[in-house]
Image 1 (cartoon, rainbow, N blue to C red):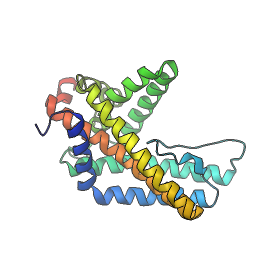
Image 2: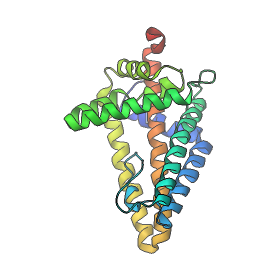
Image 3: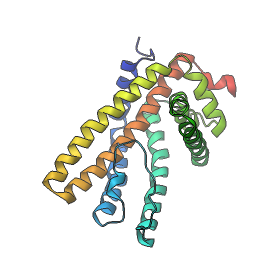
Image 4: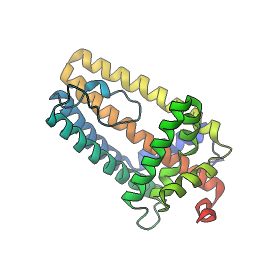
Length: 236
């Protein structure tokens, strides 16, 4: 079945999302990746942060200067806004953006709650963090597409992904390992040729890996939403 929530369909839908929203995905990659690459080349961003782990943020230590801190903060803010915009475009490409969708601040609040919850889960024990990561994987879609509140988006995602945890987990594992191997290998190959070129390529690939992770969350949302029907209405 096309909308069955299994590893194959999740990955297939992910690539469909990337293909349908190819222009926004490439624009996000070029802007965020390009800025990060420029920062790495000029010493404003720690090149070790480019690790294809589907994350991002600031690195502040004793070597951080005012200029580098300000630059990283600007890239971080732009990255968060860019994430919200890209999710909207990815959802729009699948016909899942209802009206104007959810606001930026709702998305930001939901993201902060999710990150804090997963941090606590990983600190207490790795398994709870992974469970939250899996069960909240559709929250982006409910917050951005349906305009649900921060807590409600996480709640609905938890219910909508019930019974699909293993499929989502293994699909995410395949994506993460695959991207780490392919992108990491490509970046190392470029660095071996030229350090500057390698840093720029690594930054672009790091941004693209983030775009893939957003497409993954959209893919999960589309499939579990189809599977459960108008799930969000039950909790509205």
